[in-house]
Length: 84
Length: 387
Image 1 (cartoon, chains in turn red, blue):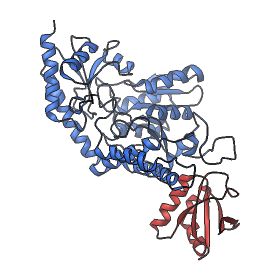
Image 2: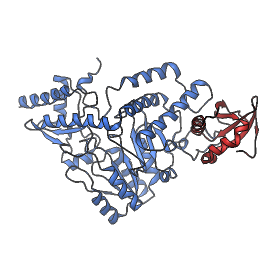
Image 3: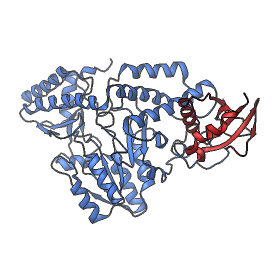
Image 4: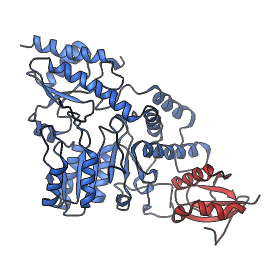
């Protein structure tokens, strides 16, 4: 499984997305957000890349709060232009 | 010497004792986690972030709000200040109730001085309740931008008909700001159904949390207007030297009170298992018992002797000065009551008890009925022996 990650504007939003996706049965987990992606001391939500489209659809109402979608390669995040 | 819970009649100030689950949660948080919230990704910090998230959701479920629009504050006073500062334009007319606490009146007076607000008081009936018809007439005449009222009086417990007043405000496009410090947890509330734009909450009273934590629950339209009272770090948009413009971060500058949140969450969860409706019935029974016993005492004038909705708070005036009666109740019987104006001079002017005030008795959910009888007997004995 290739890992991807969603980054949100606030911790409240990350946790809201996590709670919703868990309720829907997605395997998600919180991971630290690399500083080069986000200057905050924050969290990102790791998801399976092949579930990206479905996850983003499930979080459609939260799109304004999503600041980016990334492919996770070790500690590095590669921005996915289309998904976020 | 520890406080005697059986003789504690100051629950209108701070509920005591709390449910055991609250003490357990406070202890567990302090010993096992103690982390900050929203500031890091280590387990303690994640636990702190989850704690605040869970608290917002629990408050929303209990009070009919939306967790996305709940900001945690240090108390109801801060919530009221944020709401009034954010919602009221310069020069606006603002209507308020006749029994308001200084948590409402002082910020309003300040805004009147600094931003040209004009304050108008909605008339109360004999008990201090504002009828929907009276509010509608006031709105028609004065065109206020907002109506601000307490839910339950901290002096006499009398509760406003929030659902009806909220409907009046909604129909006329008036902001509805509710000071629920004295009622949240002890009287049913549904922010959405009651059209409350800004629901201002104290954690340390009937929600059974510790002091130092409260909340502001906002309607969708009110949320768009929020402006911070204080500014500082939020753990979000940290590359900028300006505040985020989104909730809850825009209203939560500085390290959050995770310790208080742990206790408040335990209190809210405890309430949710019992239901606010059941708690309201139990508290009503205590209030009715207290009023019934006080009615039989010669020389006692009761404020809050009223069959309508009310919190478990009653005030009395007697031939003794309130401070003297309170001191005697403490010295002779170990009873903790509160004398004076209860930070609500407007309510005491309404009842004609300004400036001396009253003695307030506020039994709690854990006050045994027999202790209520003993308190009334103590008052009777003191008055019988008074010169």
